[in-house]
Length: 64
Image (tube, rainbow, N blue to C red; front, side, top):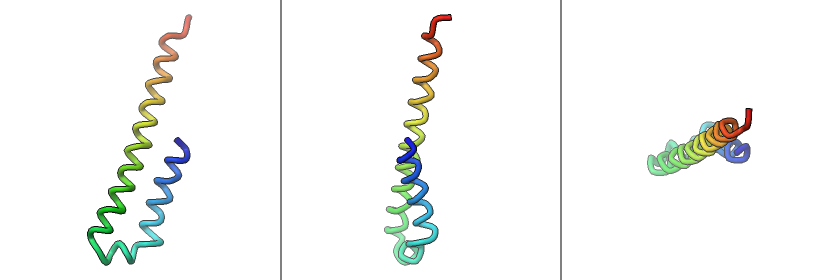
């Protein structure tokens, strides 16, 4: 999960600072780049929700 989060942050930072000129030239590259960032972000959110549900299940099944 941490690696996926770091990938998303690096993609976002790269899009804002490193390849912003390239992305400004062509709208298709812009859309492709930010769609990739969105896909990674959705992946991070999916893993976080899965982890949250696993913790809830573990706590629910724990003997009291």
